Amino acid sequence: QVHVVESGGGLVQPGGSLRLSCTASGNIFSISFMGWYRQAPGMQREWVAHSTDGAAIAYADSVKGRFTISRDNAKNTAYLQMNSLKPEDTAVYYCNTGVRTIGGQIYNYWGQGTQVTVSS
Image (cartoon, rainbow, N blue to C red; front, side, top):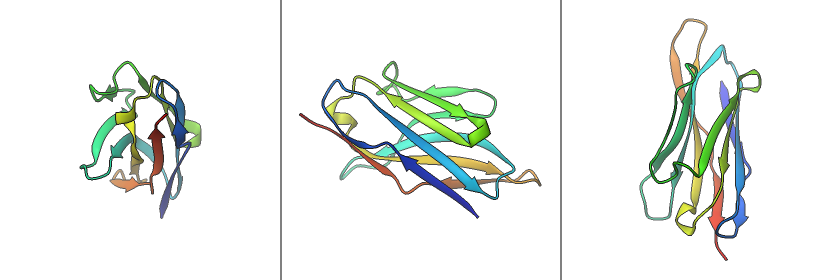
């Protein structure tokens, strides 16, 4: 069993910053990838950024230059540093991680989400 927990959401004014954290725990041999998605009210969940164990990093165009994803592999933790936040960044942010078993299989897990609200 693997648990994925996000934290760090909250209310911030436009132009402000927040840092989200995502930690995976449980029966983990290694982490294949960690990524962030978000879902605004009435909208589909959209991909924001991801980081693979091969150190490949990618961002959605809407956040490029403002958001930075990083990982602490020793802690099975990923971070999303969000700067220059805009009202349109308001959403529930979800962590998605691929956990590799000792047999080499990769299973996908989601966290419960953390709310980010950008408003004056």
